[in-house]
Length: 118
View: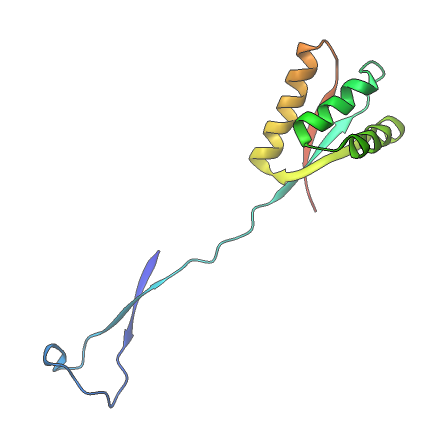
Protein backbone atom coordinates (compact mmCIF):
# COMPACT_ATOMS: atom_id res chain seq x y z
CA UNK A 1 0.00 0.00 0.00
CA UNK A 2 1.37 3.43 -0.87
CA UNK A 3 0.66 6.87 0.51
CA UNK A 4 0.27 10.12 -1.31
CA UNK A 5 -0.25 13.65 -0.02
CA UNK A 6 -3.18 15.69 -1.27
CA UNK A 7 -2.48 19.45 -0.86
CA UNK A 8 -5.09 21.53 0.90
CA UNK A 9 -7.24 23.61 -1.37
CA UNK A 10 -6.34 27.28 -1.81
CA UNK A 11 -8.60 29.72 -0.01
CA UNK A 12 -9.18 27.50 3.01
CA UNK A 13 -8.39 29.00 6.36
CA UNK A 14 -5.13 27.85 7.85
CA UNK A 15 -5.11 26.27 11.28
CA UNK A 16 -2.52 27.25 13.89
CA UNK A 17 -0.33 24.29 12.91
CA UNK A 18 -0.73 25.00 9.18
CA UNK A 19 0.60 28.55 8.96
CA UNK A 20 2.86 28.04 5.96
CA UNK A 21 0.33 26.04 3.88
CA UNK A 22 2.83 23.23 3.18
CA UNK A 23 0.87 20.45 4.89
CA UNK A 24 -1.75 18.31 3.28
CA UNK A 25 -3.98 15.34 3.87
CA UNK A 26 -2.41 11.86 3.81
CA UNK A 27 -4.52 9.41 1.84
CA UNK A 28 -3.91 5.68 1.49
CA UNK A 29 -4.12 4.43 -2.07
CA UNK A 30 -5.00 0.84 -2.85
CA UNK A 31 -3.32 -1.23 -5.48
CA UNK A 32 -5.76 -2.67 -8.00
CA UNK A 33 -6.23 -6.38 -7.43
CA UNK A 34 -6.12 -8.67 -10.42
CA UNK A 35 -8.54 -11.58 -10.75
CA UNK A 36 -6.70 -14.89 -10.39
CA UNK A 37 -6.30 -17.09 -13.43
CA UNK A 38 -8.71 -20.00 -13.55
CA UNK A 39 -7.88 -23.60 -14.41
CA UNK A 40 -10.02 -26.46 -15.72
CA UNK A 41 -9.71 -29.85 -14.08
CA UNK A 42 -9.83 -32.39 -16.89
CA UNK A 43 -10.61 -36.08 -16.42
CA UNK A 44 -9.15 -38.47 -18.97
CA UNK A 45 -10.90 -41.63 -20.14
CA UNK A 46 -9.39 -45.06 -19.64
CA UNK A 47 -10.73 -48.53 -20.39
CA UNK A 48 -10.35 -49.87 -16.85
CA UNK A 49 -11.85 -47.50 -14.28
CA UNK A 50 -15.48 -48.45 -13.57
CA UNK A 51 -18.12 -45.85 -14.41
CA UNK A 52 -19.54 -46.10 -10.90
CA UNK A 53 -16.16 -45.12 -9.44
CA UNK A 54 -15.92 -42.09 -11.75
CA UNK A 55 -19.40 -40.99 -10.63
CA UNK A 56 -18.33 -41.41 -6.99
CA UNK A 57 -15.22 -39.27 -7.61
CA UNK A 58 -17.25 -36.51 -9.27
CA UNK A 59 -19.78 -36.49 -6.44
CA UNK A 60 -17.27 -36.61 -3.58
CA UNK A 61 -14.41 -34.43 -4.85
CA UNK A 62 -16.23 -32.02 -7.17
CA UNK A 63 -19.56 -31.83 -5.29
CA UNK A 64 -21.56 -32.82 -8.38
CA UNK A 65 -25.08 -34.17 -8.15
CA UNK A 66 -25.60 -37.76 -9.27
CA UNK A 67 -27.18 -36.51 -12.51
CA UNK A 68 -24.36 -34.04 -13.28
CA UNK A 69 -21.73 -36.64 -12.38
CA UNK A 70 -23.34 -39.16 -14.72
CA UNK A 71 -23.45 -36.61 -17.55
CA UNK A 72 -19.76 -35.72 -17.09
CA UNK A 73 -18.77 -39.39 -16.81
CA UNK A 74 -20.56 -40.23 -20.07
CA UNK A 75 -18.95 -37.25 -21.79
CA UNK A 76 -15.50 -38.42 -20.64
CA UNK A 77 -16.31 -41.98 -21.75
CA UNK A 78 -17.49 -40.89 -25.22
CA UNK A 79 -15.11 -37.99 -25.96
CA UNK A 80 -12.00 -39.13 -24.10
CA UNK A 81 -11.78 -36.07 -21.85
CA UNK A 82 -14.17 -33.90 -19.85
CA UNK A 83 -14.19 -30.87 -17.57
CA UNK A 84 -14.90 -31.63 -13.91
CA UNK A 85 -14.80 -27.99 -12.81
CA UNK A 86 -12.98 -24.66 -13.09
CA UNK A 87 -11.02 -23.34 -10.10
CA UNK A 88 -8.06 -21.21 -9.09
CA UNK A 89 -4.70 -22.91 -9.65
CA UNK A 90 -4.18 -24.21 -6.10
CA UNK A 91 -7.69 -25.66 -5.83
CA UNK A 92 -7.56 -27.20 -9.32
CA UNK A 93 -4.18 -28.80 -8.60
CA UNK A 94 -5.39 -30.14 -5.25
CA UNK A 95 -8.57 -31.63 -6.73
CA UNK A 96 -6.64 -33.32 -9.56
CA UNK A 97 -4.22 -34.84 -7.02
CA UNK A 98 -7.11 -35.99 -4.81
CA UNK A 99 -8.69 -37.78 -7.78
CA UNK A 100 -5.49 -39.61 -8.65
CA UNK A 101 -4.73 -40.48 -5.01
CA UNK A 102 -8.22 -41.93 -4.54
CA UNK A 103 -7.92 -43.84 -7.82
CA UNK A 104 -4.53 -45.32 -6.83
CA UNK A 105 -5.85 -46.38 -3.42
CA UNK A 106 -8.66 -48.19 -5.23
CA UNK A 107 -6.29 -49.62 -7.86
CA UNK A 108 -7.70 -47.67 -10.81
CA UNK A 109 -5.62 -45.90 -13.48
CA UNK A 110 -7.89 -42.81 -13.59
CA UNK A 111 -6.02 -39.64 -14.60
CA UNK A 112 -6.77 -35.96 -14.10
CA UNK A 113 -4.88 -32.92 -15.31
CA UNK A 114 -5.33 -29.17 -15.19
CA UNK A 115 -5.33 -26.65 -18.01
CA UNK A 116 -5.50 -22.87 -17.93
CA UNK A 117 -8.99 -21.64 -18.77
CA UNK A 118 -9.17 -19.29 -21.75
